[in-house]
Image (cartoon, rainbow, N blue to C red; front, side):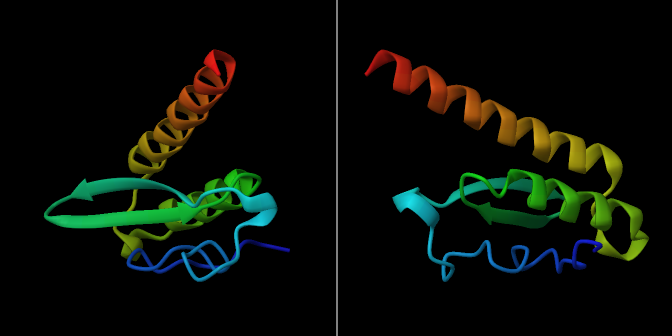
Length: 92
């Protein structure tokens, strides 16, 4: 089943702050500022693939305002956040 189209001003369905985070995880977010617009996407642990699929859908849609480079930047941001979380857990 294809991932739902996303509105850049709203997070993908089920990933916003109103969604109950599984296993008590905090809501995470990645942000892109482009041409004076801010795109913020919220997700919880385990929803990374779904967010990446939504970013790919948006990159395919010229009307979304998100291109492939933007999607790559956001996925890189997500990876850096995961890396930092793992390092923090190792230090604890």
